[in-house]
Image (tube, rainbow, N blue to C red; front, side, top):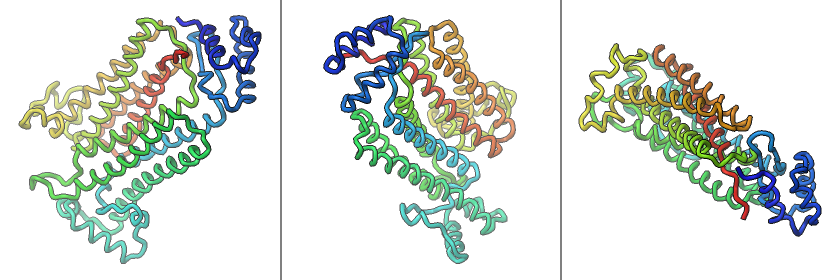
Length: 424
């Protein structure tokens, strides 16, 4: 393992020679220097030399008792809090979007206009005109028309979709306005600037995907027997894009707050790092498969567990030709895949937790491992309960929230596995 004191010494020698005397460098780099003294001295040094880049003193942690944390600047903490706030807004958008889908409200607004959409109908006449427009589209003509559907019912589904759209615009404002301010103040590093550009592009793309998804549900279906609904492909793309944007905000926020662990460079640690990233990827894939379940209402096909109608492999698993379409368009196959992806995720998390028992992990990292196992079990239990109770809206929304919480813990865990940068 790289000596913490060697890294500390390199840090001081490479970046601070012109600011500190040789005797001070020797004292701070010595193993006899207490870590509290190191922190205080570096904190004073950064305050006196405000022009010095904070990259000169990367946050460093040891695996057990070797801890030396360089304080993060006030600007970093503010930016980190802002990024966490953006992640929280994305979390809210995902949950609100899920409830909108579960209440069948997503097709109530039949057009998309960036500014005009922000003003809902107000008078009785405006509401009646909006309701008449909704009646011209397939969802009303083939499904809603048969129900006792009043203007009051329409107002409910309209406001659900309206709230989701307005929340999406709020996410953009919460991100873009502070970003412009921080850039004007010069608080944003070069590496973070590139990430902010990516976030901006993904935000715009997410808005486009939202309308592109809704538009698919407003068109006549290919087959007369098809139920009018949004394309499951576009729904999965919309949800996946939201998850990616959320993950980027989370990762970047954690970087502003959490120091890097000085982990041993051993085969065991490499295996754990690879496995942690694999689990994160599997959680994401399982969540996307859940979008296909939602898009096809596949949660209502087989409401039993662990078997599907007393069979481990249902008879209509590959009923559609060509075969590959079953994985995206056959509700039975889609539910089958989601079940077993979720079960595989929980098993892999359990194996990972067991492998971590004897690994030299810092307390914070061990907390993330335990949280991952606990949340994995909770999420699986929520999924099974949702299935057995025929997908009630509150439970289904909680299950979707759980997937994002589980992904958040996996992001935190993989962030803890970041490698210590090698001083140049």
